Length: 482
Image (cartoon, rainbow, N blue to C red; front, side, top):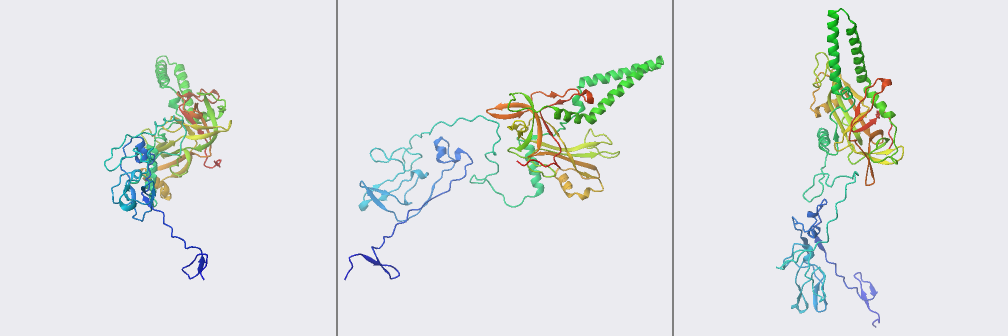
């Protein structure tokens, strides 16, 4: 006797109640090419570029559409294709304007399926975001609105440039695998420091100099007066046999010479003493354009440096100097190198913008020492290595450093000094306060500042040009982690 409830048999022979489940149709799969990396360029953004009336260099097409079975439904007597479209007819270059023909009911009616909106009569609208195929004249494009205004620069250091490396054919950053040659990487880093506009190259010795303390006019006047005094004293001694004038001139000359030698030896210490005695300012009450001194902890900006020889990372200032001692028959390190003295042969000094957290107020200020700013550094340097003809082969790292800079390593007495300001160090900065759109900055002053005469220490006045950086030797001091 048949059952009043429908049942069916499964594939394993088991009878279950209910009607057999109808097989479900799979959803159509439409493939399209991946959007390439544009790097922020509107011209490579496809539909976005058309919104701004920009010429698209290469039009993109949708991926191949599969020839899978479609499902036809009727609404208002018109056939609508909801599945993949056959490739029998031509397609336009843009995925948003694909047109095709689909057989309707009875095989006689044909209808077009557009991705755009319908008008009030139920027909597809004429307005399209791209050119249509089939000889249709494209309508005038409408832009989405005016471009946004360019934001003013605030002086903040951003996370990096828009394109920070080479790009491949699709616009994505190119990745190079495998280790690089150390000598090649060092040369690339040195070249990037030399040509990077964010790095200030301090190729001249901007420290204390007796020539900068005494104006040339006064110096030549003093030399002329002493010359006239010696001539007059010698003439009186020869004519009248009275040596008083000559003795007075000699005593004054010895005093002036001793004063000059004293300033040559102790001038730098006098300037660092002036910097340490200069009072610290409170950035909360500092006015715009005020000359201040700020002491605090350093934080790296967008482009941290690395020391040349010791490879100390995350620095805001680096200095590597190579000195040579000239004996009786030794070669000169430079054109002004005198015998039996140390002469500067090579110097690499770089500075970049960084942040400083003030100890007085706790505020954070941007110190503008990069982009070619005028900087006067007083950073202690420590002797890294001493080389003479007997031990020059004991340091392969030093020989490698010389080869990278095309410096000879013959029988010379050399000394390498290196100084740096790394992240977390305590630094004193002297400059001018500048406030720009709520951004607190310390910039170089427009004119040099004189330290004045230090009569108690017999130190002549000197000029401090640009931003002044003062940092003690941090090679043996633990820095504050930031």
